[in-house]
Image (cartoon, rainbow, N blue to C red):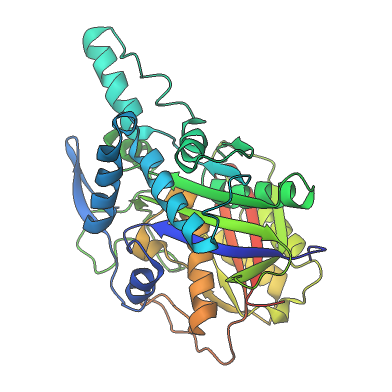
Length: 388
């Protein structure tokens, strides 16, 4: 357990589920998914794009300032969610907070567009480099919010969002900041990105099915990952706060020794270590639910489940995932997991997966463990409690 809890004073997101907590929760209550067939170059594949209203919000930001017209959708989503988070946390008159926004793929749309133009003309546009660098996200968020605190960006594939949480906590506990916005943003619905996932043979089939992504189905015989776009921003502060939505009381992280660049061991040794570290001073039976990473691949889902069985033994908590509904949003996926965990605690209602055997909630949901892992076994586990 952390010596002093970390208060979550705001969480804002954009995804296929909507643009605010009410929309998101109402969509979690529905048994349907938000995956749809889209064209990607010459291919048609399942994906989870932003809702129409969310896309309109991004367009409004792009058109609000001439400097924003050249920004990638991932940057614009980060700006929007950060604005909302600052309002929720009542930081409008505050400017000395830190910012750590990460992305797995970065400015994917712009990079592919600029590179295609280069292949056709042999020339690159003037803004091709600054608009596609990794630091592009946090620096534009800092510009938009007019903050004066530290700002940094990073990429640790799919666990980028929860690594941002770790970074923010480290700065707070070091006394180098008293508030931090941490986030992840991903706009990976592009032809080349989809082609990369298909090349690894992990993408969902286009065969007719009620649920294209079978995340948490341990009987599936085919990989079924689907990509989604989304962003989330979380405001963190040190200690007890009257406006806290919940608290982070434990953190864990681990990296596996690689067999190959996208490997994870059969029993996800990285998750065993990260979960045990997050639960250092909390008995496993105190955990009411786990929001799993569970990307919808055979090995990814089953290895994490085996790791959970190893750590929790006979006292398995309620288990769930959201990727069957939202798709895999890479960097922001861990933060969307946090949002689901937070909403389940606030509403005291478990959200399960509709196409597997239903689990029964027998006690209040007050403590939730959040998992996330990236290619190469970079696992992070975050323990959240409704109150401390």
